[in-house]
Structure formats: structure tokens, C-alpha cells
Image (tube, rainbow, N blue to C red; front, side, top):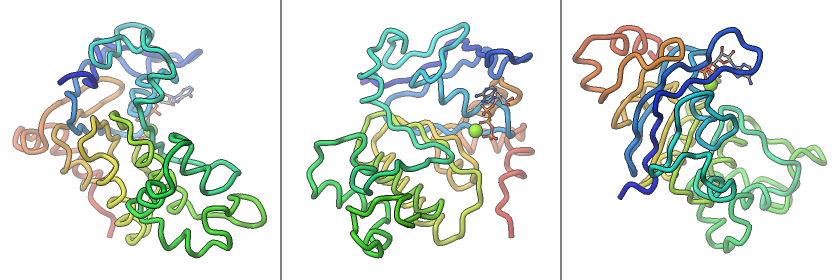
Length: 247
Ligand SMILES: Nc1ncnc2c1ncn2[C@@H]1O[C@H](COP(=O)(O)OP(=O)(O)OP(=O)(O)O)[C@@H](O)[C@H]1O
Ligand SMILES: [Mg+2]
């Protein structure tokens, strides 16, 4: 099966007006059903790579393909249906929690909505709101914390159940309880999916099958966590040090 295999073939891209390319000759293949982590210093092009998959931007040269088909030749609705995106800083819509969760799957049964909320560890936060799922977010003084918003975004992605998941892990430090909850939601979300995680935490990196290490818009190293550790290259030195948990 390779319907959702994702490949970058010599992909380069620069933002309009920028002096330098944000990414330069990126080349790797993420096989269907696997989880790869993208790591590297801030500003080295990780989010940019992720944005090219659902065509928020198009490559200047080279090709991004899903199942061997250039994303430019896939109908936008099909592309959207097949990819779940969880960004670094997901913001919710100013509408009910119910609509926020159902955004990617408006015809979902209430049972499935509740199950997704459960998996994303949202039960308590929903129960605490005055009108539970009918509570309107950002209106009437009802606000959610950053961690809570992320969990709602995870519930939305879990409910959508798209075969491809692109996850830009939050860089902002979360409290331990929140991080553990989000981690549990992420594990549910990515099970059996084709997953590209932009990783900022060592735990996420260690769980990935392969790691693509970026440096200045280029792929520096590429391999399993154990392989990269044993070769004692950039991953072992720089990245691991950067990702040490703060005391
Ligand atoms: N919308 C944009 N317009 C112009 N330049 C951008 C835009 N987004 C990112 N860039 C630039 O492109 C380069 C790569 O940025 P990108 O966001 O991909 O980095 P990143 O690896 O995701 O960083 P971080 O770890 O901080 O999230 C940077 O030089 C950045 O300033
Ligand atoms: Mg980023």
C-alpha cells in the first residue's frame, strides 16, 4: 500500500521577497503508515516543509507527491479531506465547542464526537463549561487556555480521522500535566496514520521511526533515532542537547 506515501523530490522554496530559500533541495520519502519526525534549529524550514503538503504554498522547484501524485494535481477538496493539520499555535473559531470539534467532519455522530473529546483528554474541560459543547468560545467571557485549545484541536483532528497527519508540535512550554494529556491525545491521533511530526521534544523524537534532521533549509541527516545516535553526528550532538528537558 502506498496510497498515502509522501515524497519530497528535490524541493526548493523561498518566501516572496526573501533573500534566501527557506528550504533547499529537500529530498525524502515518508512511507504510508509510518511516523517520521522533522527536527532542527528554529527557522530552518520545518514548518515550511509542512506547509507545502496541503499546498498552503507551492514549491518553486521539485515536486511534493502523495501516493506518487503531485499535490498540484490533486483536487483541493481531496487534499483537505485526506490531511489533518495540527499547528504550533492552533486558534479556535469563535463559535460553539461542538462546531469547533466537528469542523473537519460536520456529519459525525454525537457518539463519535464524545469519543474524540475523550481521547484528546477534553472531558473535564467540557464538563466545566456552562453549556458544555454548546458553549461559545471567545464570547461571553468564555476563554480556554493554550493547552486546552490545543486539546480541542486534537479532538477535531481525531474526529476527522484523515489518513495523513501533519503535526507541528508546540514550542511553547506547557505544564507537565497538560503536556502528558496532549501526548496521550497525539498517540491516539497518529495511530495507523502516515505522520510527519515537527518535533520539539525528545520524547516525540525517540518515538518516531525515522528522523529527518534539517540544517539551514537542507537535510543534514536522515535515519532511525538509534542509527543517528550511533553515528554521533549532528543529531547526537546538537539536537539532543537542545532537546534536553528543562529542569
Ligand atoms: N510566512 C512567511 N513569510 C516569509 N518568511 C517566512 C514565513 N514563514 C517563515 N518564513 C521564514 O522562512 C524560514 C523558515 O521558517 P520556518 O517557519 O519554516 O522555520 P521552523 O523550522 O518551523 O522554525 P521553528 O522551529 O521556530 O518553528 C525562516 O527564515 C522564516 O523567517
Ligand atoms: Mg515552525
